[in-house]
Length: 422
Image (cartoon, rainbow, N blue to C red; front, top):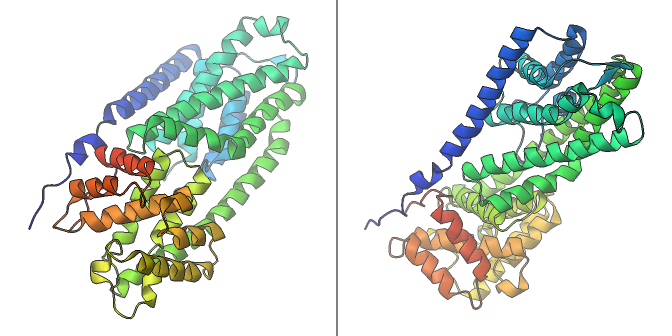
């Protein structure tokens, strides 16, 4: 028996393509205009442009080609150098004469030079160009017309003014990143923006503060301050790479454990992966933090690990039709297994509590239960996706939180998950 697929997932998934193209076109137009302006006027103060260009190129060359999931910025040195050049007004007490177009041209050229052989993603390059242009447009015209010589001049307020521009640039980049993520089907815009803003107090502020410090230090001590002050950022980048390697190893361990139930024939092929992808989309829709999303995804991948303790596999691996007490027993056994894997204890807690009534569960456990139930029901030829959602809505009095069910419906309506196979 066949069933009609959910309503046009592919068109919804492509609904944000015009916005993505608009952002890329804007970045491309800004880059072309900056290159033409710089070529016509000539490169102002080439030694300064070269120093910052080399710094940005080295930072780009040292980045990871494909950062692990959850890693925010893989080239902090290049980003700090970009911001520092955009906010540079003096070098060793002498005023600079480069303008905003030259900032964009130098940043673009240095980024592409440092990424030879492994070009950066189009979204990331567009954000780098537009972010550099935004910061430079906010600062360079004020510097060129002498407004900063009157206030804040060389007072302590000058550093506060640069920090204010840093906050504006950070907010601008977060708004742009959230728009691109939303356009590519990463959930509602509000949830995507909250996710971007939550990441700022970590490496985001460290990179931004590093760029401001570079601009202030070079203004006072000259270009010799660049190699000295870049060492902490380089150490930060190396530490991020080590952390990324540890995360990648743990992710491989979790993925291997998640596949054991499929290999043993207890669950359908791809079930754990589908539940993890859809649960992460629902968690993003509900505004979970990046840390909570990582816990949610790990728990969703291993939510069926307790089935390995069963003598006979559950038909089709679907636990939703089982009695409540049997589901709780499988969940507790799964939590005991997960605790021995070395993953954070929050993951084991979600696995253990996924079969409880939703009022007794943390939000990640509610999401795992609802998404798992949807996948089990939607794969049943006698039910299908639409009837599966209807059954989840009818069970919101005890088993499924209404807010989670509606978030799941919203993700599916935007084509956030491929239709599950029978």
